Image (cartoon, rainbow, N blue to C red; front, side):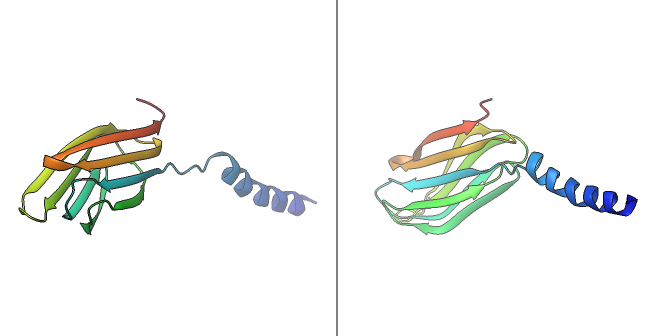
Length: 122
């Protein structure tokens, strides 16, 4: 009987761990190119990692799912196709364990709007 009880507990503990403590925090991120021109070498830096794409056409969106580890600002960098000018834009502070949605709208003249819908709020 002792062996059966240990086997039952051995099976129950991993299932309990999955149900209670394993939550993965993600932020669904969208970068929208509303500059009116293509952008190249788009890079989005966030605490502990980055993502990007070689090019993003005018009017196009780029979706990426991130997990924030640590805290720090979001930074966006891209190159304007026509002028080859590198644009660098700082965004909102991000914090570990935030989850939700984040929208980055690239605008003309190297400007951007950031629309975070993240929880928990700082």
